[in-house]
Length: 204
Image (tube, rainbow, N blue to C red; front, side, top):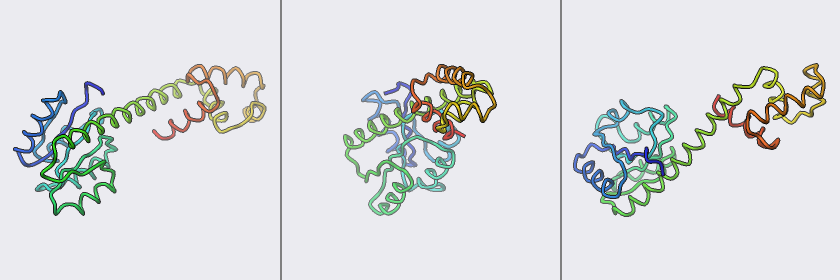
């Protein structure tokens, strides 16, 4: 797992925050604590990696409201909710909105640690995929305008002769541009070009 990952603990109960921070520190996991959702949102940025351990019932801004605001920001941090017995319907709703788990109080420390580790592994995988998408975006935007035209058509399944006719250039010129595109995108196959186009569209 990445050394930069942190567990962001959001709970209005100081005892819970301190206890979790000490627990995570004892096993070498960085933890940052916040007494409210707004306190976390004030410092949140898209480069944060790790996961959230979020109390579902807090004054002023509930855990569900925090989750919704983060969703609106396209936050990819996995969320583990901590809930009381009466909060189960809310926790189920949170799962529907994308939370990866909810853990009832009082919780088993090892179970929570296991779920946090799973969340960190998941987030690292998602973060790496996002980095790949951004790298792919940069590579595509480095193409010349003609290379971009060829790339778009090749990725849509057009044959070289059709592309040549469409762009009013020779088939040999299409082959040269296609070779340049493959090289710049690090693509070995047509399937790779198709995936590159799909990944680019997902970021735009």
